[in-house]
Length: 299
Image 1: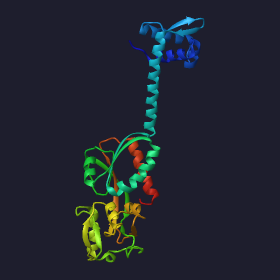
Image 2: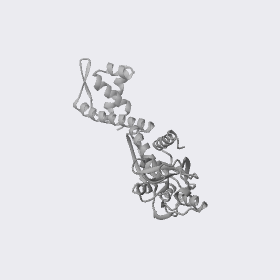
Image 3: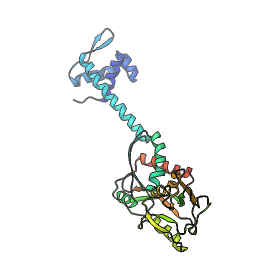
Image 4: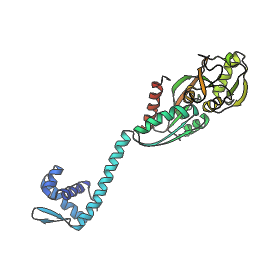
């Protein structure tokens, strides 16, 4: 048995309109054509679907049972059409995003808040991880988008620079240097300094700025991220040099933020898997990140 879509269309039209003539008008074909299609359907299934009463066709009980299933089928097709449209308009889909803390705890949540308002049916897995972890996930082609500070190139990934943001100095709100217009290494001589891990790129750049001028600090506390440094600075536990995105989020929470010279640049990059076809939703999210960074003047 092979029922065609054309036969089902004719059947639906007759059930809805009650006559072959009206069904033919709805379908844009001749009355004999509809009659022939219906006859073919009845032959295919092996039982009659209509009885003629004067000029109208009365559906049999079998026809009403069949109509219920056909209606469900067409509703399913309409849903497929709707999903296809949502995919085209980048409304639905799964998105795996991994980011280092600097962007993952400040910029990306801001972008995601707006993004989810426009893409209400999207499903996002968002995790804040180390650069090393993200790089490996990207090499293995296991995530859609990665955001990192670590300079890293690999044939399995495509990278794009997003921002070169100048680091800032964060201090407890009541600190003696809180009202300075700019802070230099000599200003922080003898201060308890909140440092990043020894194997990190930013630790080397920051240490180099102080070593070049032979400025000693009290290196008592190491922290993992800018957010950790800001949280400790707010409690009077020291000063630090951090990314401006995180520092902005802690303003008014017990810290002061002052530009630092010489300038130390945070390099933020987006990464995509080279051997995994990018989804329309991933394109949309990356576009939203770039637009947000441009709007803030961070690009």
